[in-house]
Structures are given as structure tokens and as C-alpha cells.
Length: 170
Length: 151
Image: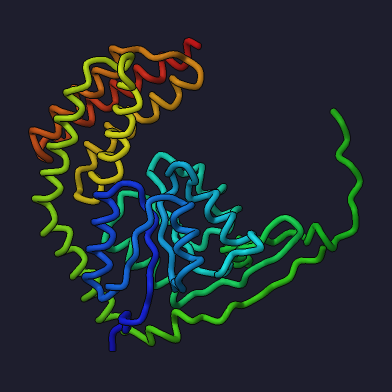
């Protein structure tokens, strides 16, 4: 039994028309035919206001509103119609340092370019099969940023352990 | 404010149902085939990009630098998907240099043109010259690093 993507609506946010076409074609080949393209964050937010989407795939670098700013708006804006929509952010291969920033604005999954068939499909499966808790704190709303489950760390728990004496200065 | 944990309803899962490993492998195979089928389109897009790059006479006039960056950025994002890693890496180096140069070190036209020439050359010779591309890429990256170290 394969996934039934017939009723799934995807919003792709990509300012490069060739990349947008590539993503749309790839989606279509696995049955995701209900794909809308927006060319920047502002256009995407408007699209979200007028339609329900199940999944959003976005480029990071766009103007005037980039993928980071758009994700912040979707997660935190009081008029956001779907603050928990899964967001897959595509980042260029030299922009790995931006992954942390993308994580901190509430990105669900990252897809490092080059965009390959395998990577794209794996991220879609991750969103479907491994949904993450959303965390709301005073300064953050988004998927839980802790991806690794503990187990290897053998030391004490700093938040619950007794305070230790400061290290002696040499 | 104490952290609140919320598990939103997984509407996507409800809509798509389940899949088996065999189906996933088939889906990935289908995606690979799509990329293969799109290769002629990719070649056409790259040819168009190269024509646009060559038409730019100088980074310093008529918004040349912004155009160069835009074209390089476009090739960078696109080339890797078609296994043209050397093109993707060369355009990445150019984008990184322009980013850094604009912020602090000023633009060296020769370094920009060296990148453009390398991009045009390897786009035309195809994917078979990976070793030569790696050597040139390494030289360009060293030149960029040297420029940045001299700031």
C-alpha cells in the first residue's frame, strides 16, 4: 500500500522558477499533484490565508520576505491561519550555518541543496511519520528543537544537581 | 513562562495513510527517473544562464554584480540536483565571494571573471572533467581566502 497523496495540498515557496518547476514535477511524480507555487514569503502567507495546506516547502533565500521571516510569521503571527503546518526548508549547501537560525524560527525539517529525489522523499516521510511536539515558551513557538534522545551522557543533570563550587583560578 | 508541549493532530498522516518500504523505494526510483527526464531542460536553462552571464560586461556597471550573483545563485541551486556538483561548487564559491566582498573586502573584478570563466568552461565540457574542476575550484577558493585574509 503506497501513500495516497490525492487530497494533500502543498505550498511551495521558491523564487527561482526553474527550481519551482523541478520541485513541482518531482512532487507530481509521487502523486502530490495539488501543488501551489508562491514566489516569496509574503505571497505564501497570503496563500495560507485563503487556502488550507497540509505541507509547506520553502526556499530560504528570497526577497522581500525570506523563508526565515515567513516561518516566524506563520508560527507566531496572531492572524496566522495554520501555525503548526509542517515546514520543510531548503537551504543551499554553503548555508549550513543558517540551519540553526531556521531551526530557531520553527522549521520542521531541513533539506540541504542540491535537491535530490531521495532527500526530498525522506523529508516528506519524516513529516508524515515522525511528527514532533510543538513547544511554546516566552520566546519560541515551533517543533521541539531537541532531535537527539539522550543516553550517551553519563554526567549529572545540571538543572537538578546541587550547585558546584566555582573552579579555582590558576 | 513554563514551556508548554502541544502535539498537533497529524492531519497529513490521516490523509495519506501508510506506505511500505517497497513502495517508498519505488517512489524514490520514480523521482530519480523524473530527474533524468528533465536533464535536457536543465541543459537548456544552463545554456540560457551562461548566455546571460557572458552578456554582462562588467560587475561594476548596469547592476552587473547583482545579475552575476542572481545567475550564480540560480545555477548553484539547480546544478546539484542534476549531479553537476562541480558547477554547483563553482557557483557557490562565486556567491560566497560576492557576499563577503560586498560586506567588507571590496570587489576584485579579476576574481569574479575567473569564476565566470570557470563556470562557463565546465558547463560546456560536461560532467566528465571533475578532477580539473576540483583543481580550479581549489585555486579559486584559495584566492578568495587570501583576499579575505588581507583585509
